[in-house]
Length: 494
Image (tube, rainbow, N blue to C red; front, side, top):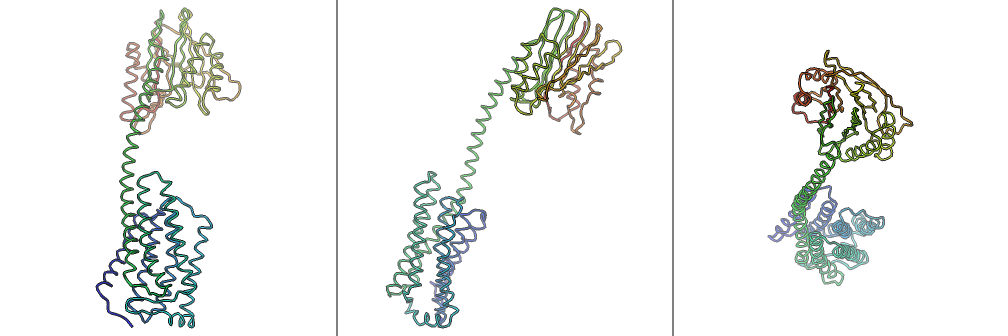
């Protein structure tokens, strides 16, 4: 027979609907979260069990079938709670084989009750032993029900053990609060409901009706709300973590900027303070690093009436390149008196031994003798020196073979090129940051534009000659940022 639906029944329907909504909300909020997925599964499992409890109370003519089905569904509450407890403590927990094997126990219990439903004799026997007296449900405390009750108590207690262990290990305040909420809510709700319902049935006292379900309903609401609040808090917490990380990153960036500024000052001291003074020659040099520190390096040596000029360009730019350029400076300081090939063989060995993997440097070394009015040049994979003739504006490129420094490809070979100079001629050395200056259309300044700019600048004093060239580079690149270090050295024969 069926009984009329009362206000209490309607209230129960509303509560069950709320629980289902909470479960779906938690799942949708972040289905990739183990906590959300397993909590939703646990809550839907318990809600289905409660819903079947309401059905067999309202439709008592189907009591045996609905009660057996409810018990089959309820047998999985313990394992879903245990799995949920594992991820509440550690969301990244990967279940071990024996933990997965525990699902065999509820599956066996559920299997027995499903067999009871489909086997006529077993269903008839079960039907004869279950009944309602008013709101009290009487069912036999037989072996299957003992197994069902023992399993639930065992699974829940294992879950409590996991939660207690996690509560003792966790140092994070919010994590401890989350675990504590789940622990107290589940203990009060599950043990109270199981104690009232199952033990009453086993003792033959009958389950006392809806009153026995109130603790587990309150427990589910408590856990659900705490999980949702924790998820919301987690977002706020992550925002706070991001803010603190940004502050720490800002402080770290300030320290790095201060270190880079110090490195810039140190590197500046590695470069000549001023151009050398030598009768018959005018010298001007400009260095524009793309970062605070760069990989370009230049230096001078004066011997009587001879000016030696070294210009090197380390691959890349930044701290590592600046460090390697300082190694080149040390080598140059000790071997500046050597001719070009001997100097570059020494520097090649130094760069290969002291530099990091895949780092190399190009270089050019020129000697300008004002007595003989000759220029000798040696290159190590660098841009060739350019000589701009004062009378004709002709530009001579001194191209001699020689590989970059530090390539570690066996014994290197470097060659010397010579050219006679006349008064008014200018020698121009540069790094590839000049010709590789790029505009917004990704077009390079290239060597031809450089030669045209050098010819146009011959009517200006040496310093203005360099300024005009840099202005042309700036005009060409526009808003496109400087992509590499730029160094130019101009020498005029007076």
